[in-house]
Length: 450
Image (tube, rainbow, N blue to C red; front, side):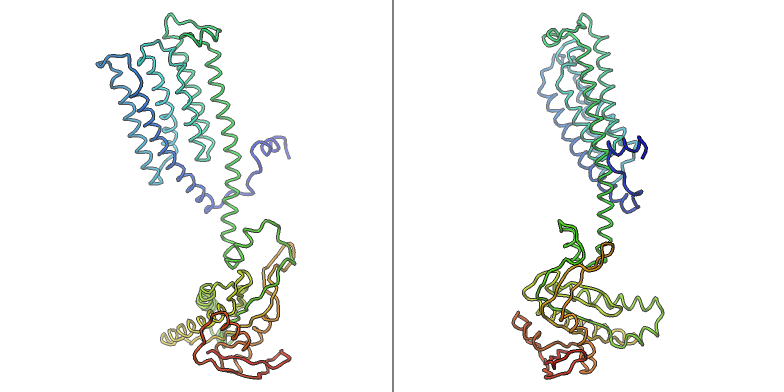
């Protein structure tokens, strides 16, 4: 790393890994546009403050003096300019030349008002050099930081610095009889001018501007990385169940393989009957469109009951209730979701038949019990999943669905648990006692709900 790169890193922080993609740049632009609205309202508030100060300040000039109209006219023009700027900010149309003009106009108004002080009080121009109103310069400079662009901060600061140097030069040349001294006592007790004091003000303006610009440059890099990471996280969250994505985002520790917890949960398994033959008759595009339609219906039913999709297995969907999101009614929620899936897919199948397409039939199974929910994989590739007997049983019951000619099948123990958790008895529920399920050693009492 070169010395310039090290200096850049030390002063401004790490550079973004790459040029922000278009969506990230658009997100940053939206943040900047919203900041311009805030800036516009603050500018209007400052105009009100200046107008109030001018109204309350005693005036030494006569009512027919040109100064009677000059300051109110300047304030009126600046108010109109600020209103235009605010309207354009709401319309998201603020070209850079207009923003630069706005910066210069801010400083011109402030310095112009300070210039009028000597006329209002009937004093030589050196009088306005002591005006505390100069402190408003720092407000205008700080306002530019809201946009997170260094250029406007520097423009505001250096416009103020050079403007004050011009004001100093004007005061020195147009204050006859006013002493230019090195005495701060004379400076504080008269209209005497101390150049060093005015240079201190200029140096303070420049230093504050540079420090603020440095802070903005560092913050902008951080903002770009943060917005880019946020956009990436939003995109990646589409590959995770929303509950799992929120859990990952909120965790304070690094997630490592093998982390997990034992919970009581209910597993739902769903797939399309005759999918292999159906897939062979469809083009790849039509097959993916079919799966998208099917999965959209299934996922909506699962999410409506608070379940989490664990994975998609071709036409199969594996979901859990009570694992990613703890629930005391996980079995009841799973059975409700399963019944909703059967009903939604039956309606979809009827619509397809009416359109001359092959109907769709599904098999849904549900099993409850203890599972382990956690991360598996290695350090480079992790996956959150559920592991346990209910997962295996739900998958094995899928074959039993075909044997029984059922669309929704579950163990009687799971059905009883769901009833205990508030599930209303399902009309037409059929008990299937002593069934032999392939891969399960003991006979099971099953319940067919559809």
